[in-house]
Amino acid sequence: MTDFALLSAAQGFYPIEHDRDGAFRWARQRFRLRRHQGQHYLDLVLGRQIAGRLTIESNQRHESHVELASGWHEYSFCLGQAINAELIFAIDPPLVEPNRPLLGAMVRSIAWHSSAERHDRIEAARANAILNDHEYRTGVTILRSVPPYLRVTLEVKCNIANKEPCVYCAWKWMKNEEIGAPAYDLSFLKGLGSYLSLAKLVTDCSYGEPPLNREFAKIVDLIATSDRALTFASNGSTLDEKIRRALLGRNVFLYVSIDSATSVGYARYRDDGFDRITANLKKLCDEKRSHANLPHVTVSFIVMHSNKGEIKSFLTLMHSIGVDRIKLLSLSRENCMDLDGRTKQRGSSFVFDYEDEILLLDELDTISQDARRLAENLGINLYIDWEDFPNHHGSDGNLPLCSEPWKTLYVLNRGILPCCYGRKPLARWSEQGPRSVHQFIDDIFNGATMQTMRHALATGAFPQYCLSSPNCPIVRKATADASHLDSRADIQSCSKSADWQPAPFHKRK
Image 1 (cartoon, helix red, strand yellow):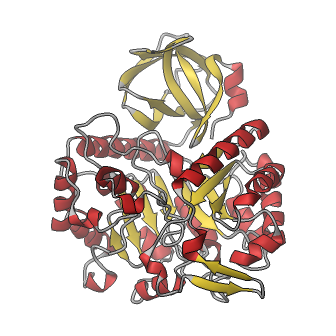
Image 2 (image 1 turned 120 degrees about the vertical axis):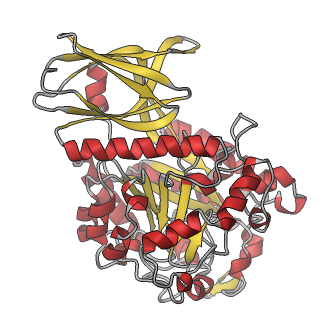
């Protein structure tokens, strides 16, 4: 992560800004950094809307040139032993914005190091991501690249659901889907080969609580490197001292699901663990300040009829705890809830009726306006899913309708899927046979079904798989199906932690 105190002392940077992924600074077309003594490599995460070229020189006139791709990318620059003073960076062509002429690029992070292995790993992942983006933009149906965004399952057990599932969790449905799945342990993850080593982000999509995995600390060590992030969702009750130690200082995006501002309200949906969860969160947010402010902590709140009046109190409470971001989610209609039941009794006085809890879009929009005003007053980084869902088609009408089948791979315990809104796997693990995990994924990822999907999306049509996934916001927007317009899709109920990643400037959890 960026040491913005360091950048504030450097020349050529504008003040800190935030987007949905966190903090960054705009660098001017020319900016300066002082090299750390003895460090031979410089890592920069840079973002630009268009391609360009970066030139580096020192006061010894040593120069090097690097081509910059559009989008966010991590670059590792080999500086050599001869450069030991102030470095001057120049980016062409410049970007021009009102009141800020001659911009170079957005800078997300900066790190100095001397690891040739890390340098090679970063450059390999960047080359793959750039090739992948080219294949997406040109509508290639058989890919030479691997997706830069990987989705996996880390745990099938849940300390809440093993007793009584949350009222909006399709627990029985998922447990039926998981029958025959392999164990997602350290060995399985290593068997993913290049699908893991070239990934920029690995996201857990478990119907379970990842810290319950007996190898959790080792899995964090494997996935969450300096140049690759791990994202997972937790109910928060497992974030004890041991788990916090595994997370502190690591490149992890943690999402904790809390849908109430009080212990009484929380018990309506989950259990009696509210006080323990908020205490764990407070300790983690305090402890991570001395560990490069990592992991990054987001709390989520599903906005429903029964808790819509708690949003103000929730934002205020989370602000006092010190979380990095708050995410408001909408509750969607999901057929997979049928097996678990849509009406559930909690305690003696509360009945959760799934359909009655869903809010219409007009009311959600009013709620979001009030929430944004409060968040701005408190200085809170707020994400609202029904407003902020990225346009994957972008402004270029020649792009495929969706980038998921190119940029994201879902290797889940219930099978291999093409996107987070899909419910039917393209292949289940019972079909693997004698093939290795890597070969099995290869065959499905570039198989006939995926080729057909990519061809349809690249030619401006939705394949049947997409049309059978009505909760997808892209499909709904394009088809303008009035029966779905009253509840913007959230995947919380049937895929609690899936996180879209295909848009070049956005990440979503």
